[in-house]
Image 1 (cartoon, helix red, strand yellow):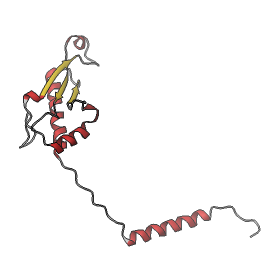
Image 2 (spheres, rainbow, N blue to C red; image 1 turned 180 degrees about the vertical axis):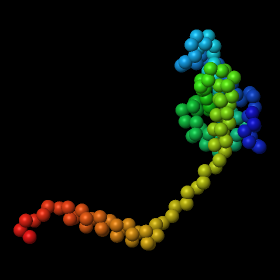
Image 3 (cartoon, rainbow, N blue to C red; image 1 turned 90 degrees about the horizontal axis):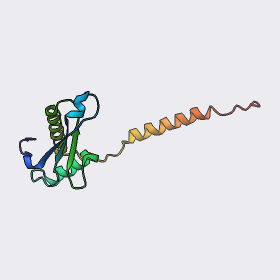
Image 4 (tube, rainbow, N blue to C red; image 1 turned 60 degrees about the vertical axis):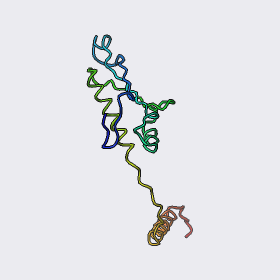
Length: 139
């Protein structure tokens, strides 16, 4: 399975298991195993660099197992073949997202003008709130 120009996933890294799907489908649901569970051995994959694996782990969340495998479950359609395609597409998309290196945030200081504007707005707001106080009848 081809992900990008330099990353390809071998067949031995993927395992597919077909299980019975829940939801609508009539008697078909009880007879045919249409839902697919795609398992990708990400931690053992020689094609993924270390940083990509760590980003993939973060993106996968609960779909990442303790053994370092990524599990994608699809039961959207009543067709086993279509569910299989969807699962492979999702895996490829997840890996493509993990390939993108996040930009480092550069800390910046607020400008003098923005500090002054903020303090001026705070002062005006405080004065407005001070006017809401109790009115002294003797004055």
